[in-house]
Image (cartoon, rainbow, N blue to C red; front, side):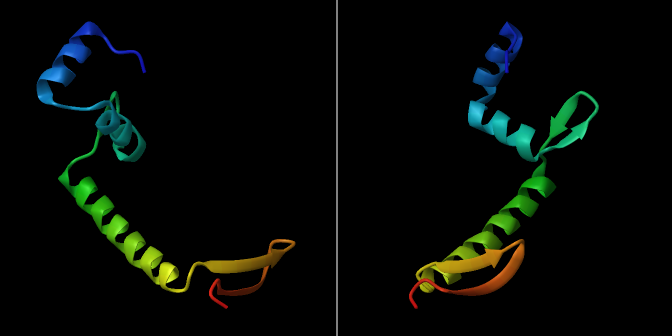
Length: 82
């Protein structure tokens, strides 16, 4: 996204990185001409990341998983360790 000189200066002064801005655009909520990612939104995302981490660790304990499908139907699933 192109930035104005004003935005470039203010973002630098406020210690806001490009990655933070990209993250806000991706996960924040639109309110007219603004995108807001506040404490509530960040806490919700942290909870989702924690839940995702627990799931990934369970899958890692199985050595990964294999899912078999055909024609959009689940045939079977099994741990990669099998």
